[in-house]
Image (tube, rainbow, N blue to C red; front, side, top):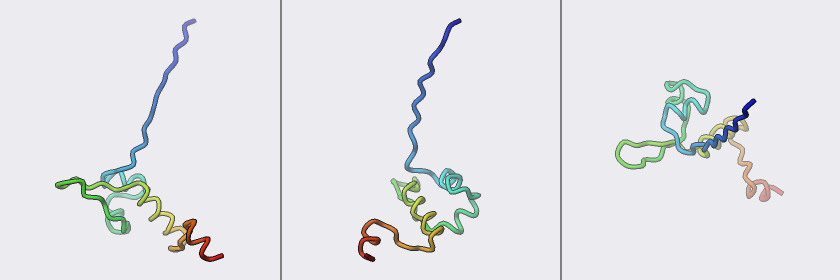
Length: 78
């Protein structure tokens, strides 16, 4: 029997359009517009993109009640 190797490389996107960002956050696009306070980056003209890292910070702040849990903030509380 013949064998085959499949080599697939997937590059994760950091910048997303509005529909992709809404999907990433698990929201419908209409709900994303209302509840997400992350500002998209204007990459020229009408090209707006959401940074995955900004979305992650927003989601984390919603989970923790806006507590600043950065390394610097934790150290300053010690």
